[in-house]
Image 1 (cartoon, rainbow, N blue to C red):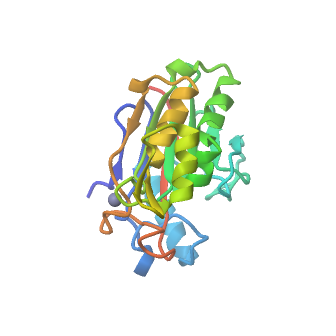
Image 2 (cartoon, rainbow, N blue to C red; image 1 turned 60 degrees about the horizontal axis):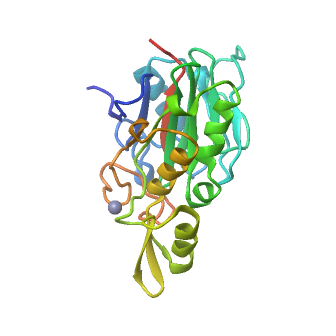
Length: 255
Ligand SMILES: [Zn+2]
């Protein structure tokens, strides 16, 4: 059976957004949970990474992840270290990039917006985790800036957002909705009653990327909603916190 992964055809590098299927974890983590920090059995998570690594065709030592904290830091992934096996997170941050051929950068999510960025000129890739806090802090722009600081041209960058909690399911307090509208403009939030609003995080991330210089046609939005589809996706909100994490990743490997 082919390993189940979602992809964004716009991105010219090996990449993917994992779904629930394909792993060995059980219960609320069934089956491809890729986080050791959510209460799943560590051996199961390790086996899941081994399966994913085989499917993607990389050594476990190629993965570069970060300890995510809903901040706006974006770091460069460390080079090859020679160690075998899956390296621990390389830094406390919510974005990670590399220009080292063969390395794979990834972020974990279960409702938050995963963003992959590719610099086709500089042969660099980045992965970003944007929940509402990171989105409000414009972490996607911080990632663009990190690549531009290396010589990337923003108008040439390509980006994709993966499965996350979409507008259909993301109800927040009216105050947070108003804050997002003030920060990102009309349309990112919609008042549903006096106390609540629906928030469109992906739209806010998309506007952030365009403000940072990306072209409209260079940003692809996958439509999947993690909260809508319990058979395919983990959702932190729907599952009341007891659930797995998906990995969204891109490999520095240009044809
Ligand atoms: Zn939904």
